[in-house]
Amino acid sequence: MPPKKEKPAKTAPASSSTPSKGRSKKAPAKAPVKRQADAPGQLYQLKVTIRNSKPPIWRRVLVPADVRLYDLHFVMQSLFDWSDCHLHGFLIDKQLYSQREFELDDAIDEFWVVLKDVVKKPGQTFAYIYDFGDDWIHDVLVESIQPAKPGEPRFWCLEGERAGPPEDSGGIFGYYHWLDVIKDKKHEQYRHIKSLMGASFNPDHFDLQAINDRLKVLR
Image (cartoon, rainbow, N blue to C red):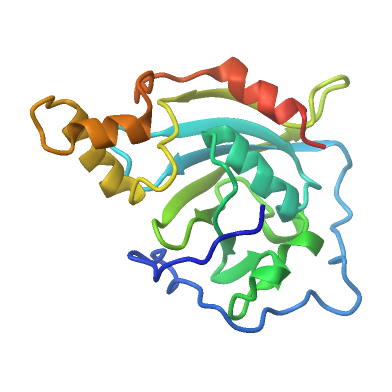
């Protein structure tokens, strides 16, 4: 479904102001971006943590070095069970990458950008931003770069902790407010928030199998 319009961002990433709508940049005329001549069949081990989550909401995942940022977006959505109903972008070395149709100021089209061309070594960090209204900022750390093994899935979550927050819960601090509300059945918002979160929602639950089932359908 097409992305809905976003309200102004509440919190911008630490290294840049929140993107605004305008005319996005296309990748260079000779896109796709020229790739490095490193060994084929490499995997990036990434640790993805929702910023300001305490205790941390995080995932550890393997992705191919030659994955496009366009496809990495869907990996991020699968890791936290997001619904892909808001704008998103990657912030790498102060450059924003996003979908061209979002028309974000100074953004490069993520469709043509390969991960290993912009993130090149272990220890490097970047951000994945989802929903420029709620500002879900995911801090991504490249933990290692390793050879791929025959028969391995293209994307694979190794481990993690805690459930992904519900959509439209107001960002990390709004989400924590919701958790406080559902602890108090006498709170005036209890029934409303509980209905939004779902009766079975458990913030401490982590379902590795469900995550990898979602990742299996990605190409």
